[in-house]
Structure formats: C-alpha cells, structure tokens
Length: 365
Ligand SMILES: NC(=O)c1ccc[n+]([C@@H]2O[C@H](COP(=O)([O-])OP(=O)(O)OC[C@H]3O[C@@H](n4cnc5c(N)ncnc54)[C@H](O)[C@@H]3O)[C@@H](O)[C@H]2O)c1
Ligand SMILES: [Zn+2]
Image (tube, rainbow, N blue to C red; front, side, top):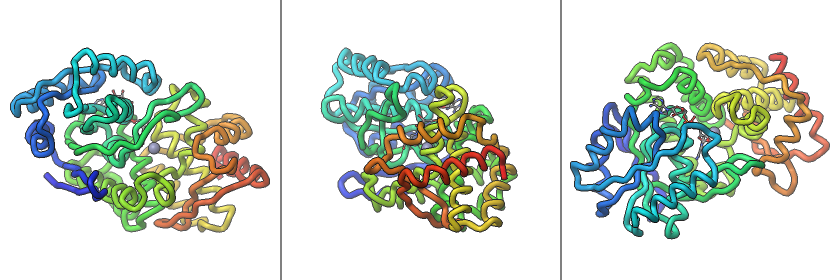
C-alpha cells in the first residue's frame, strides 16, 4: 500500500493506494476519526459488489454504518437526491463528529461530498472511489457538487476529504467503457503538466488497456501525485488549478447536448481535448507532430470516439453557458506543446476560431 499526502495545511490528508485494501478502510479511518457513525453513500450496483466488504471492515473497528443508496447515473447527481440523503442523515441523527463516506464513481463521490459539505455545516468526508475516473481525479481535491438542469456541477462547494482509499482491484469489475473513459482524465495530466507522464502512458498503452495491476497502481499513483501537486498550489481554483479543465468546456457542452446520456464524462473530455488541441495547433501553440502524438495515443488506447456531429454553433453556445466563464469571456485551457499549457480568455471575436476547431475535431483533420 502506498500513501500519498495532500498537503493543505490543517486540511492535509492522505490518499492510500493499493490492491485489495478495501478491507483496511476501517483501520485507516480509525487513525483519523474517533466517531462511531458512518453514513455510506453508494448505488445498488457498486454496493452489491463492495458494500459488504466495506461495512465489515468498518464494523471490525467499531463503526456503526448506515447506508444511503442513490440510483445509478449522472442524472441522479442532483438536488433531489441530495435532499433524500440529507433526510436520511437527519433520521439517523448524525452528529457533527460523524463521517460521510462515498463508495462508487465520481457521481456518488460528488453527491456524497456535497451532502458532507452542507449537513450541519460540514462533516468529515471519506472517499472510496471505484472507477478509474474517480480514483485519478474526482476523489482528490475537494470539489463536490450536484448538477442543475441548466448546467453541470452548478451547485457545489470545496470540501476536502479526510482520506481517500483507492483499491485498484475494484477496477476489475468496471465495464471497459467506463474504464477507458477514465483514461481521458489521466492523459490530461500528461498533456498539460508532465511530458514524462505522457511518455509513460505511451510506453505502457497495452498494459494499461489490459488493466495490468502493477501498471495500474503506478498510473493511479502518478495521476494522484500530479493532481495533488496542482491542488496544493491552488486549492480554490483561483489560478493554476483551472488547467485541470483541459477539454472540459468543450466537453461539458457535448455532455449537455447529449443530455448526459449519450457520452460518459471522460469521453466528452477526450472529445474536448481534441478540439482544444486543434485550436492550439491553429494558434501555433502545438506542432502538427504533437497533435498527432495526442490523437495517436487516444487511438491506441481505444478512446477516440470522434467529436459528435452536433451543430458547432450549438456547441459554442453550450460552452458559453458553462460556469467557468470569466467576465463573459470564454476561458479555455490549451496545450502548449506536450507537458505545458496556456490559459486563454477568448472574446467574441475568437468565436470563429473556436468553431473552426470544433469542425476540425469533427472531421478529424
Ligand atoms: N469532483 C471532481 O473534481 C470531479 C472531477 C472529474 C469528474 N467529476 C464527476 O465525476 C462524474 C463521473 O464519474 P464516473 O465516470 O466515475 O461515473 P459514475 O460514478 O457514474 O460511474 C460509472 C459507472 O460505473 C459503475 N461503477 C462504479 N464503480 C464500479 C466498479 N468498481 N465495478 C463496476 N461498476 C462500477 C457506476 O455504478 C456507474 O454505472 C461526473 O459527474 C463528473 O462531473 C468530478
Ligand atoms: Zn473531468
């Protein structure tokens, strides 16, 4: 088991990464919490796979657990479900020293974390992520939120977990589509932050596809290290943390046009990254050969779904509705070569270039 600290002053916490460490959760939680009550938030699918092992592990260390199950799916990451869980917390008489624990992917994690942030002005929160996306991205960094009908993650907070327990063997049951979609967020770290990590993914693509255990752990560890390094510099996203949104403004528009049903979040991020890469090429930030390296890696990993043929003007409008808009300007994260970034504010006059990048991503050339 490897331990990675996320250094955030009094909110410092550890990420534990290992194979089959789900059964150690109770013991790890005892190190940071004296409570006896834990509200576990999950969905029926994940809970049927891993719930018993988790609850047994908590029980062994004297924790009493209450389970709140939400239906499976992004469309349930909303206020109504949050209220249902809050009601369960009230019914169970959860007090300030209780712990809320998310067992599942980014959806369960974001929803449970949101509830943890607001119930009695904030309870301790623990993440036990079970999708690749959640293990490498959403469980680390403290962003928690629910969606609003007008936009993703519109209502949320920063609420850091007390710890994160990543059992990489849970990925064995994850559908290949969900697994692969998480790789979009992994590659993002290489593209905008660390060229060496990008090469690591290139050199291990086959092992990664096959979920080779040793390789997976390294992939997760390095991703969490990069994400935590960025979060440590800028916890509340006033500056550099925004680079984690590579591909997301395009991606959120695609997710919305697909009514959150058509594409997984990670798939939309890959599509958005393609569009951002074409825009970067146009702006002279990226060489043709670097663009090809990125596209080639997506292809080799089997995460190259192509940008869907929505009307580019509609995609652009969707991007304007994204909440990450500074002074009505569209803020975009663009790759500058591989391993570096540029944060750019585009005004109306750049609309043409953005639409052109979408069209090029659609055509793939
Ligand atoms: N908070 C953040 O910083 C942050 C960052 C990135 C993404 N997100 C959010 O994460 C969400 C997407 O998360 P996701 O891709 O994990 O989706 P998800 O939580 O919907 O999980 C995908 C599917 O896998 C199933 N599943 C989960 N673990 C499993 C396992 N071990 N075995 C079998 N099935 C399993 C789930 O039930 C679900 O059907 C989005 O809402 C996105 O906005 C948040
Ligand atoms: Zn994301």
